[in-house]
Length: 471
Image (cartoon, rainbow, N blue to C red; front, side, top):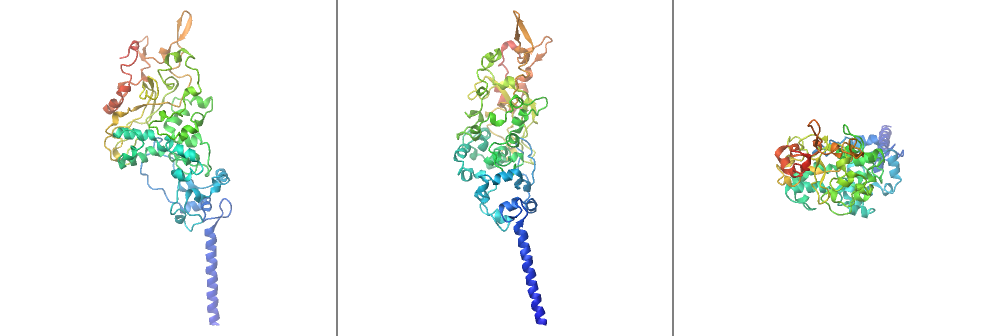
């Protein structure tokens, strides 16, 4: 009897162990995910199980760099950035991309025993960082053209850094910079240069990163979720009329345009060529593409069509400087010298070889000679090679601005002639007050000797019409 009881206990214990293991296996393998029965060990099963993602997520590492041009990015928890849910996820599952399977783009291991194993080996969190390998299989032409685009490479910003460091400009120059300076650039400037996914699948890093729409591939990027998340301090801020005293751009309010109505997909993807400045891209939009035959439409155009860019008359105050060019956290050095601010300035055109105007709107972009000292470069030795006020095309266009106000008239032989001078020229009124001088960039507007040495030649001192009587 004792032997029987002994064996019975052993058998019951074995049954309990087997049952427990089966229950544990069931708990590990099955989850009430989006489809009610996806394996937790699968990519899709894990990423549709929000509670599981919260259990196994890895916290973000401490920040190691700056904020980019738009300031600090909004924060999304790691599990919120990777969860598959909603209509976007359903659309993705039924799309050509969704049918490829997760490991086709992300590598790693599907149906793994752990998160570490699933993300092991050659796992890629952001496949479009390897667009030649991952995207070009289906989109060879786009990938080939985009490789040298402004959006992917940011050649304009890179060339500004290499020029001021004294290396000149060229595709190979950035790689020749000191590692510390390249690290500073990556931590700050490069936060806004996008991969394919950051336009079509995810939020840009500047917008917090992560899936923006359940992994749906959006052929047309969303103007607010994608475009102006990066182009915020200059583009979106102006276009939506967010500055104090400004109103939205007429192209938004009257025409309902989004970014792609002017900036074609071919321009955004690039033409495959290297440009060290975005205005050199021949695919960029020009006002004359839509506004044809305007040279003789009125006396102002007849007089000034070749003198100024269109924004000189038709833009409002716009954002200058910003939070970019910041020092490494904790150093207390370098960085921008002034806070972002609204103003409007007309100066001498600094890029006449690219834009054929005598004068143009200029934007203050206050990088200083020691802006990178937090990253090991005390002084940019060739800082003066470029001005601190740069050619700009504000996206806040109106037909009627302070400079196109022609409500004051001279009457000649009974015919009313709008007095442009009242609105734009620098004049002395009947009381001896000087008007409109604030529109123009003078040497007295420049701060610090280093800004004067870099920008003096683009101020209007001594270059305005003598009959304006401006000292």
